[in-house]
Length: 98
Image (cartoon, rainbow, N blue to C red; front, top):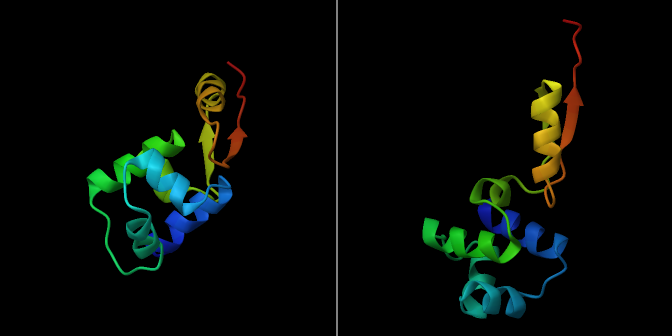
């Protein structure tokens, strides 16, 4: 997915207006609009500011909304579930006898 479309998906998923995101991230609303329309390319610094506004990592920002499946052991799965607040992720837990 194009990065602009991804940024819009995240913003709409969080039900935030462009002006509110701009204020939270310390960016200009017109710049947010240009990013979402693919008229500007964000720097890593910009992605970092936007991800902090959502309380996400840059990696989660860029993968927000994608369906991912992870195969983890039970302890790792429980740790992952504790940290996954905003990203929709399918977690598959395989419990194997010792």
